[in-house]
Amino acid sequence: TLVKKLRNDFEQFLFAGEQLFLKKVFEEGAEQGVPWREIVVHAITGAEYVAENYRSYLASLLGIDFDRPERGVIGVNFGLSELSLSILSENLQTLRLRRLACEDPKFRRALYGRETTICPNIMQYYPYPTYLETVPGPDGENQLVVSMLNPSLRIPLIRYNTRDCVELVSYGTLAKVVRAAGHEHLVPPSRLPFGIVWGK
Image (cartoon, rainbow, N blue to C red; front, side, top):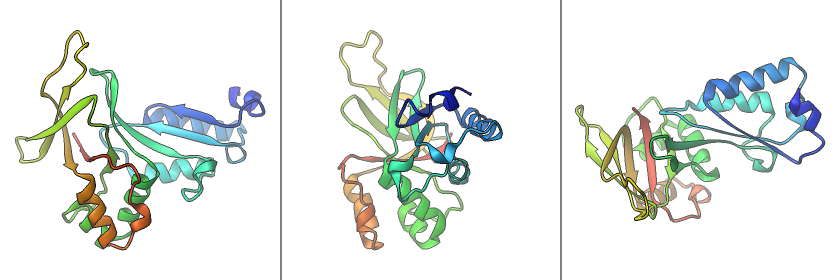
């Protein structure tokens, strides 16, 4: 109801929330006659793992075309509530890389460096506010370890193990894989390092 009342007062709407919350909002909105496809809607969500078909489903409800980001984007953010900040986030290129990997098994194998039936989120991060590293987990997976670099923090966390399974990849390494696969246009312009988030 609120969106219907405000639809002509704003150029675009941004929704941020957990996956199930956003799904409920957009589904119930459609049932109540919210013209999602006629307005510009962006959505940000996050979790240990966000399936790509979830994003496709929301896009079908909202009328989002991933080749036309000016009409709306559904992005994933990786944050840690105990640190009160965002650690890794998607951009248009990493979003498109993941969607391509879901469609192309050969590219998926090259991008993730292994055979996999799932496509983890590919995200970039700023190395200045936080230092990211990985340590081996009990099953041999890489677990994310975060050190806060802001000296003014009252309780700085040093080498805090989040228990998230994440692979850290340099910009040069990932860009080389993407270029070798013939997708130069999908190399992110920002030369920041990457995190591939497999889950908890």
